Length: 153
Length: 259
Image 1: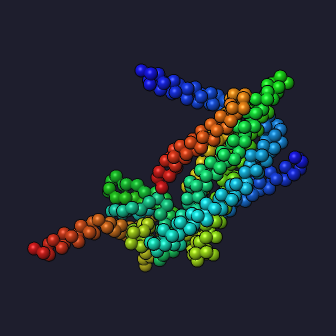
Image 2: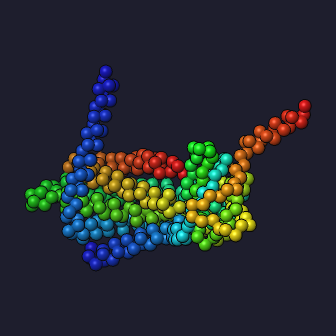
Image 3: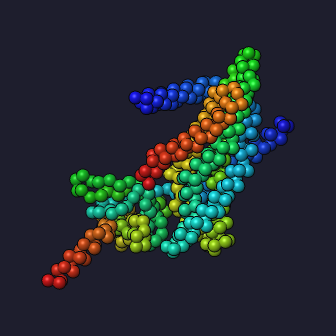
C-alpha cells in the first residue's frame, strides 16, 4: 500500500476521532456553557434537606442561578449545612429566603431562592438566614393519618 | 482428591498466565522507545487496526442508536416523558454502551487480526529471524501494535457515541416527532462532562489496554502450528470479551457509585 495514501487515511481517522470527541464534549455535555460564569459562594442551614444532592440546581423564579457544591452536617446545631455557588451576574438581597423544593411531584430536589426587600446584597461566604426544609412525603402522610385518627374519635 | 488437584492445577495455571502477561506488559512498555523514534511503525498499525475498523464501528453505532431511540421512546411514552429519549440514549451510550460495544467489536475485528498475524509470524519463524538479525521483535512488532490499539480504540469509541446519538436523533426527531430543541436541551442538562464523558473515555482507554494486550500476548505465545494459531485467536476473543465485561462492572462500580 502506498505510504501517502496510508498517511491520508490515518490523518482522516484521527481527525474524525477528535471531531467526535469535541462534538460529544460541546454538543452533548455542553461543556462551555456550564463552567464559564464566575461564581460566589453562600451557605444556608436547613433542618432537613430531604434528598438534596451535590450539584443540584439552585433556582430563583425558575431560572437556574447556581449549583449546590457541598452538603455537610453542622455538629453544633445539628442542622444540614448546604454550600452553593451562585453566578456572579445575579445578586440577591441579604434577607433572601432559601427553600428546598421538588420539581414535579416526584422529581429531583433543588434549592429555590426567594428575594427579600433589603438593600444590602449577599456577598461571598454570607449565610442565608431564612430557610425552609424539604417537604418529606412520609412525614406529611403520617401527619395526615394521625390527624385523621384524632378526628374519628 | 482428584477434583482438588484439578482445581489447584487450574488456579495455578491462571495465576502463572497472569504473572506472565504482566511481565509481558512491562517488557512492552520498556521497549516502546523504538515507537517514539519511528512513529511510522505505529502509524502503519493505526491504519490496519483503526482505520479498517471504521466501517463496522460506524454502522453498528448508528443501528444501536436507532434501536435504542425506538425502544426507549416506546417505553418513556407510557409515562408521558417521550422527550427524555435524548437523555437516555446519550447517557446509555456515553457511559456504558459506547465503550463496551466498541471494545467488543474492536476485539473481534482488530484483536483477532493482530493475534493471527503475530501467531503466523511466529509459526513461519519471522520472529526468530528478526532475533537472528539482532532486532528485538517486541520493540519492532509488538509495541507498535500495542500503542496503535491504545490510540485507536478511544477514537473509535467517540465515533461510535456520535453515530449512536445521531441515530437516536434520527429516530426521535424526524420519525417520532420529538421537538428538536427539547431533545438537545434535555440531553445537555443531564449529561455531565467529568462524570459521564470523561469516565466513558477512561473506560475506553482501559478496555483498549486489555484488548490489545491480550491480543498481542496470545499471538506471541501461540504454538507455532496452524491449530495453535487458530486456538490462540479464539482464546484472544473469548478472554478479551470476558475481561471487557468484568472490567466494565468494576469500573462502573467505582465511577458511578455516588451519582
